[in-house]
Image (cartoon, rainbow, N blue to C red; front, top):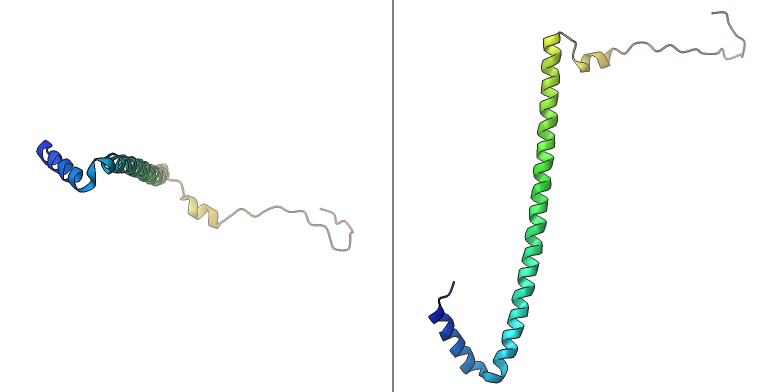
Length: 108
């Protein structure tokens, strides 16, 4: 940041170059531009922080899901149960009652 003597020198040079009539107008425009810049950068910063929080939340959810899968696998191993993947490969045969194509019933 600039010190007070530096700011005084900059003000005096601007006063000499721009003149006393134009200096307040330029100062107003510069102030508006700085306010717009701060607003835009603040909005951008908030948006980036929101995205970072969302990414962290997604990472925590993935970690929690992985941990629950590991816990379930450990519990299955301790209990001696078959893993869930193996039980899905041998499904129990489904019982269906099919009617004959000719419409006649057959004794069961």
